[in-house]
Image 1 (cartoon, rainbow over the protein chains, first blue to last red):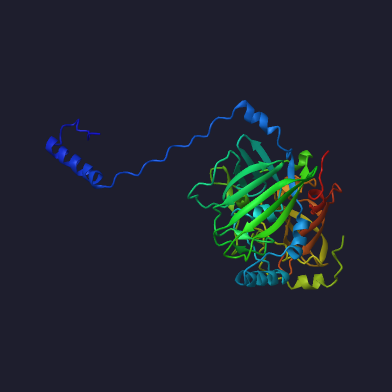
Image 2: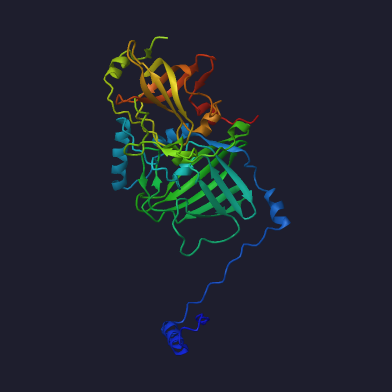
Length: 285
Length: 142
């Protein structure tokens, strides 16, 4: 594109020089790398919607069996490396002493794999063509997109709290493969005890109905920097159909604010005075 | 209703020694190990604020946990709004000024906080409890 010279104030020779200078780096640079073709997600066809009817019924809201989780803290030992085990032992001792570490008090997502393993809150499963979506309650960003359209993991996926998940159906079981989870996310048997996965986390899940209204997630968690071998564990969820179980919105950071009014009379969020760690203070006495 | 303790009559004496610092661990999902579930404090209280927010609902009350003691602010922590909805709570279950008969498990370190256990609204007799385990760990299909 030629520089705009409608005002006629810039000599054409100068413009030509400028244009040459601008073009020179492009001429000297290496040829541009071939651009990968844009991959399109095709619109679902009637058969794709019809095929959803062949999948198992995971409708309803699912609440976790936290009592089972607590039993597993003893019965389902995690194969920690010695270094990780020492950290875990310290955190366990702190909790026993009434000083639990708040792994999740920063309001960041519980993330993978902890969301699936230790949340105390409900979740739901949505089936659409080419995808299973898991939505959680509390922490508005509890969300997993599991692509079931046959794609592979991207070659260089961006690490995220829940990672990149691809899945396929083996009969009535959804097999999910997850990579590219942020190294900071915890492998944690409880909300007070856990160690960051520290990278290269790989999770394989087999999610299936273990009874008419029990959903079982069998997880194989490979975390070579903190585990000596793949940890195989399970999580159980109970189906709820009573409408009072419908998922409600929950924004973790809302707890740091109270409802207030500004000088103009607007309804606003007012920060609640906090101590270190974001804990609330009761109002001044 | 006179304040009383269940299981451990020493609690009011312990409470006399409360520090003035009254922080409550309530920012997000966390262990409740800072609360002493072997101690239950029962006392009349007046609601000052009901914070129906994630991640944990908080009930602020004025309460005298020892007979003759001046009422002070206590902060009682609960689970999430979603979980409480399943056992009959709403965002308007309590309002400032409600007089209640309160039970809670205090913080181990003596600060003025605790895990909410149960409250009965004096004016209506309505009772609210806090445990969601039974509601969440069995299917509710009807």
